[in-house]
Length: 546
Image (cartoon, rainbow, N blue to C red):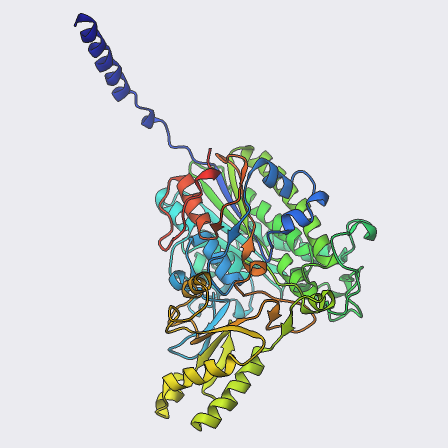
């Protein structure tokens, strides 16, 4: 009994010590800086198609020293830029966050709306009035918004991308700044939404360096000997696009003559990635990101792979060279972060907003299923059929994002039977060889398409910002003609994306179970011990964390 009593006394004493010195009293651990990287139009297979040609400090650093989710899918359609960047940082889907495409037809006003348009603000750094932009069309918060709330707005959040939507939407509503590239002036700009009436001195200084001009004067030459490009097609392919001032889509691509005239070329060449990386480094240095008492966040999107992919395709020598150069830009950026922030002191996640389909001409040569059908053709055919049946012109406003949009004002004014119109459209489209399925968006569950596709359509649907009939094209079919290619479908070539984590508190490894784009925000929020974004439906990928 005496022994038992002594044990009890010892237990009480130990418990008292534990109560006075609890482990929970240790300071909450967070990284100095979170860096989110989106590579526009990066298919998952690019990690391994060019693996043997990558250096050790870019993509391979993330693959071999970080954690890679090998089977990450986009859980909605359409798989396009604005939706993808928004999903990565909100953990949400278009049905909830409201960014249903790059542009959409507003059901109430019947007008086309661009995803970041905002007439209540003015551009800063340019007189181009088309640059009135903000995140107000996005209905939910982002990782950055929640990080700022969690730190009582002591954290800084900055985003950088060539594309306005790829900078503005990831930055969120509370971002300190979002910067994007004005192809008319060759300058990085922002808007008054971010409480600025003039560019910060450091941004103006960066613009004064004329980095775009310097890059264009270098032209675009292959980084290595042509014989080394074994993962791509021959250089001169009939189905690849060419620059307007060039005779053929072949190397060397001459850019110098377009300096000061056509800065949009940077969006379609590796120089755009290099310029973005330089701007990102300038933001870290001048905004002192990762140097304060609270965790900061930098969102970076590399837009050039999208431009290169659309023009030349995923099997082109141009895209292979683009990714080899991006790999070097990433290596340089990570080495910079090692020096300025400290290795192990920053958290990186890298993903993509969508993939891309092979060019129809390429598939045609390989005898794989493919085809092209312009949606403008579908729209004309539908209006002809509907006029024959209902005696009214232009009942279909258009076909956008693979969705048929009806003119409901015209339907109401002519007292037309909407149900009969829907049935007529669906019956007609189902006769087409290029159509896999047609779904009435008022009754997705009543369709006979597989559950996975139903879920993706539902996740992408918003009553006010979506159409009325969903068209699912056959595999390999595109609303895009040769030359070039595009994306937007549910198929894996568009929806299977890379997802890698590296750095602070990341356990190296690979995961082969299915994960989703929506899981990114949930996982990062859990790692930071902050509330997940307001519309987040993702799940934490627990295997990422130490």
